[in-house]
Image (tube, rainbow, N blue to C red; front, side):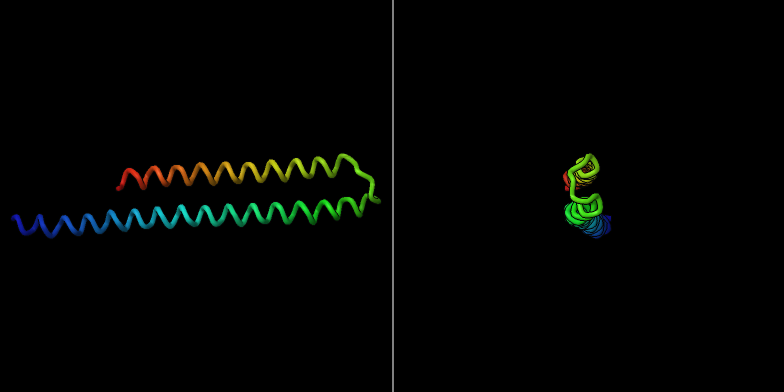
Length: 97
């Protein structure tokens, strides 16, 4: 019986390490996705602001500022969501280790 317990233990440890590795990969993927979304927000902000200014005959009106505010809010929501899920996954990682 002692031998069967010795064989079960490494298998359980191996499964735990696979879980930890999966959680780590998920955390990295969330981080990469959030970074890509942030880059997209900044790019879209620059291009769309230029288009708004061009199509409104170059005066500064409220559309430009509202648009910038909406993009900043989207950026902030993305950052907060990414941080929340990364923190939650890292907490699970700490519990597994």
